[in-house]
Structure formats: structure tokens, C-alpha cells
Length: 294
Image (cartoon, rainbow, N blue to C red; front, side, top):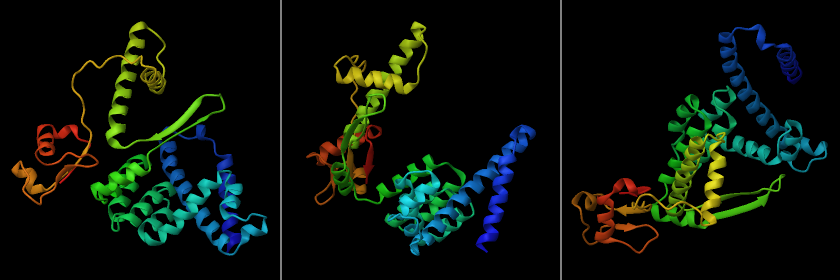
């Protein structure tokens, strides 16, 4: 059976090698993109399922690999980290039968399946909402929705504590000697920072256009804006408005009433501000808060 399946895959590879898009109409090519994408996702899922079964019987050790992910990455040409993620995803899909079937049929990708499986593990029942979204959208939209689902399932105080614990800034030198890095900031710090950075980058881009310069990508102007900020060269804010970014936990009855009674919650998460002041902020400008939990 394995030999027969392998022969059919070999035949498909030969057909793809001989395939020349220029011999087909644009409409035919558009249809083939959909077909190829589904086949690619189904083949990727079959590869990982097969690798997981091979690892169960220690086949990777026969080729001199102690770690199944290292062995799989050798055959895929990818990284061991990606291979490990894919193997873990396939294991988690045992709890998501509908998503597992969708992956096997090529309806969703392994990346989409990973988001669904992770969210289902933290928020049971979420698969039913996320799977239809995965079938009709890309990974970015699904990832955003899955992230919101996971975050909304965490009590506001606990969420803020988790965010504080994982805050980080990492930096390193890349191949060109550039200083590269990543950062993870809590919303009350990160949102105003990103808003300021994007406003300044847009301003620099507009100025370049007005001067008649060759317009670069937005990321280049964001880098210039960031450099101006840390070197104290950033232009002063043109508005006196200051954004407030916080999480307010408030009893729904208190919010509707406009003030809190004894025993009713109303406070800013992570800050020693509560009662009338927090309620006043929420009612005065609710759109200026990153989130409000009632």
C-alpha cells in the first residue's frame, strides 16, 4: 500500500515538474492555484502524520537522529523548531477532530490548525467558531481572533499579571551588523508607544514626498522615527490630547448607574485608582481605553 501511494505521489511530482503555467489561460491558472494550495496543505498534513507514526516506532534513530524533529527537518529542509511545532500540533489535534479532518483534506493549513488547537485547549468549545473562520480567511485574521478568544477567557487582573510577567526586550546583531530586536510590552505602555511611532513615521513619509525624495517603505520611516525618539529629536506633539490606555474592571450595574455601591467592582487594573475616578474616566471617554471589562 505504501509503495502504491508513493508511486502516485512520484507521478504527481513528475507532472508538476513538466507543468508550464504559460500554456494555460489566466482563468485556468487561477483555478489551479486553489487546487495546488489545497493539495499542498493536504500533503503537509500527511507528511507530519506520517512522521509522527514513524517517530513512534523510532525510525528516526535508524538514520542517526535522537530527536524526531531534527530528523523531520532534515527531510523537509526546514528548521527543527518548525518541525517540532508541526508534530506538537498534530498531537493536539487529537482533541479537535473536526480540525484534524479539515487539515487532512487540505481545507486548512497546519499553521491555522495550530491556532485552533491551542485555543481549544485553553477555551474548550472555541473550535466550533474558529474552524469556519479558518476555512474562509488567512492565518493573520484567524490568529487575531484566536488571540482575542484566549485573552477574553482570562480574568482581567490575571491577564495583566501574565502580561507583566512576559514583558521583554531582546536584541542582537544581524548579518549586516545591524542591531535587530523584538519587544513585548504591556498594553498601557505599548499602545501609546506604537501610536506615537506610527504617527511620526507617517509624518516623515509625508515630508519625504513633499521634498520629492524617492519614497521608501513604511518600515524605513518607522526606524527613523524610532531613532528620533530615543535620541530626543522627535517632533513635539501637535495635540494636547493624551491617550489613556488601561483596563477597567467594572460591575455592569455600576456602569449603567454611573457610580458604584459598596461591594461592586470599579477599578483600573494594575493601578491604585478606583471608585468614582475610574467610573468618571470610563464614562468621559470610553473610546480611549484599550479594553473595558464589565
